[in-house]
Amino acid sequence: AGGQAEPARRLKVKQEFDAIQRRDFADQAFAVIRDYFRGSCAEINDVEDVKARFEEMGDAAFTCMVVNRGMMRGRGEGHITVRNDKGRHHFGDISYVYESHAGPGTSNGAARVEAGVYNLYLTLDEFMGRGEHKYDAQQVAERMWVDFVRQAGIEIDDD
Image (cartoon, rainbow, N blue to C red; front, side):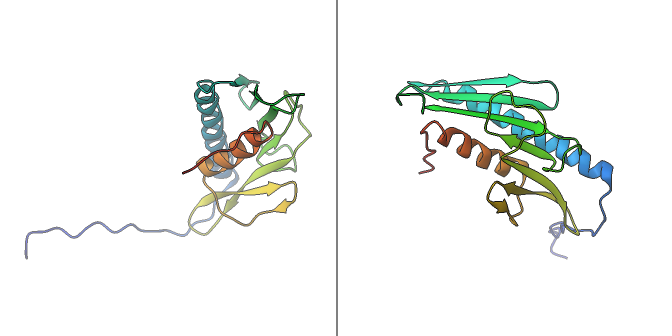
C-alpha cells in the first residue's frame, strides 16, 4: 500500500437515447454554433477591409453577412442563415443556407443528431452528399464558418 490512489477510470455506459435527449443535444449544439458565429463576427470586424454582421432571427435562427471590401464587383460577400429546425424539416436538426434571412424550407446542408451506443454526436449532410464523420458542435461551427467566409474570398490560415 504505497499510499497513492489509483486514477479514477472513465467508464462508458451503453444506452439508448430518446427523442428528448436528441432534441436537447440539438438545442445545445445550436447554441454553440450561434455563439461561435457571434464571436467570430466580432473578431473578424477587427480585420481591415473585412466586416461582418451577426443578427438573431428569434430563438431558433440567426443570419450572418461578411463583406470583403478588397474584392470588387459584388463577389466579396458571403451570407448564411442557420436554423435549429426542432425536428420540423427533413433536412436535418440544424440546417443552413447561403442566403441572408432565408426562410424555413431551404437548405444547402444540415447537421444531424446521431446516436452511437455511448453518446450523441453530429454528422453533416452537405449539398454534395451525406458525411459519415462524427463531429461535436464546435467542429460543425468551424466547418460552417470556413465555408461561409470562403464565399467572400476569405480563407482561414491555421498555421
